Length: 241
Image 1: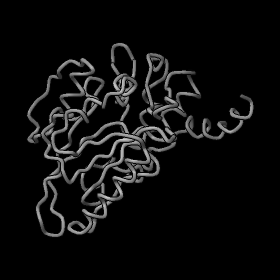
Image 2: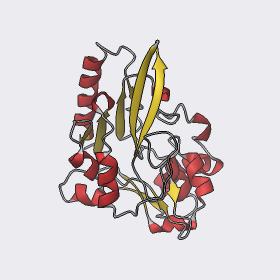
Image 3: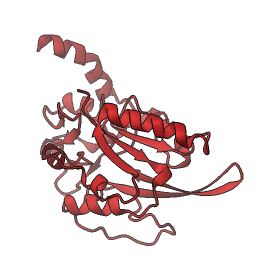
Image 4: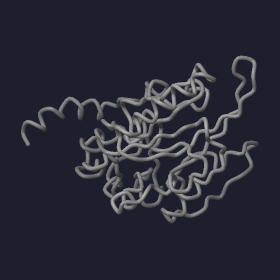
């Protein structure tokens, strides 16, 4: 069994923000004080209170105007750099669920500096509560999934953008849908499908939507010294265990 995955079909996203609201409600997160930035994107960015955010981008591509929507969240990397950093500093601060593959931040993250963890993430996801120092991000609604339910964002999505299930099934669905979409949008791509559990189908190359859609875009951030040392030590840790 290869765990679980999301398939996010951006060709169907209308930016209703149902997923964003459902996430906040299920996690019982407080509302944020925001201001008008001239965009429909609200709040302006992810935070410890907003774990999923629909990003809005206006882009002219091949001479045509496009309004692009991107429901940003943790990608649940198969080999998560954030966990590599955490393992080198505080044992058990970041866990990876064996059954689903979900990458989960625990309260022990307060013992790690966000300045070490966030730069290690190629998707710029980790956020911290400035008062408690505990880090937060999407946890795949692990409590719901373990109870046989869909993640809140998937349960709420009215258009079929958000999908969730066994990884092999989601990969097959993504490849099938990509072939269909390419007939109209030849630049359509899947974002890092071999490396993450949240697979986005983009109508255009990912950087048109947002800087950190793919790990390649965030490449300079992908490996801190702590993450590199942790990765090098990983094979030896397995042998010793």
